[in-house]
Amino acid sequence: MKLNFKSYLIIPVMLLLASTSCDEGDAIVDDVVDNTTRGAILRTVNVVSNELPIGEADGFFGVDLEVQDSENGALVQSIDVFANFQDNTPDNGVGATTPESFVENIASSTFTIGEFDLPRFTYQITLPELLAITGVSESDIDGGDEFRVRFELVLSDGRRFSFADNSGTLTGSFFSSPFLYGATIVCPPSPPAAGDWIFDMTDAYGDGWNGASLTVTLDGEEMEFLVDGSEGGASLETLTVPTDAEVISIRFTSGNWDGEIGYTITSANGNVILTQEAYADTTPTPGVELINYCVKNY
Image (cartoon, rainbow, N blue to C red):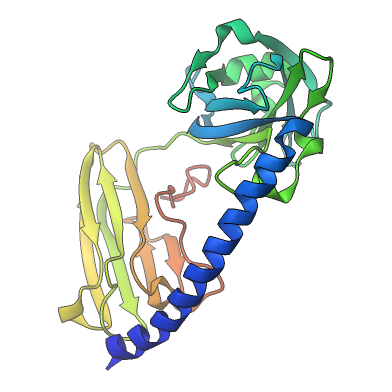
């Protein structure tokens, strides 16, 4: 009965969304095309890395970007890069946002041509470089702090375009052009507690997790934990972590009806590491590390 009810609910909603999405999509394209001559767009093609692990010199922020303007990118002469530090853990560190610092200028001669015949480039900057540029000490950073990297397009006629020139059309569509990016400081993992980890999982409706799961990676070996349909509303499973284990990771894979999912994960030392209640205001973010490595309680 549950599947039929949900199907009946989805069909009219999907028809409405399809009609609305087409109209909105056309409007976005028309708006961008009509207004491109007013400036330039720096479109996000791919965020390569936006996490900076503490203590790892090769940790970096990286992003692939594409230049668009009324002359297919030819109006952009160069790109200025700026950075600053946002202290989100004021009990440890500088306790404030640092002033923005100039990082470097990227000449258009370094661009390559992408699949849409528009200029592209990949930008990367390491954690040590960001620390040096902003004048922040590594002892002042903690998990949850953030470096912000801002790009500013410099056109051949002297005009400049950056974050302050954005509209909702440019930040919330295929043409995603935020100009401003955050790179979050993360703590490196510590060896997990050896022994039995308990996965107490529930489904509020009683029909399993409908394609969702918890992916546990222990020293490179992946395992799936979930409530399947045959188990109904609950499943209790154990993972035995060996004494020589070095890294454990837990990430969520989304399915249908994630709001029905609940779980409590307890490590071998007796600490509750993760908990999620059914019908909570938020569901776990898919693909993101769920363990807070900065809290050494696992």
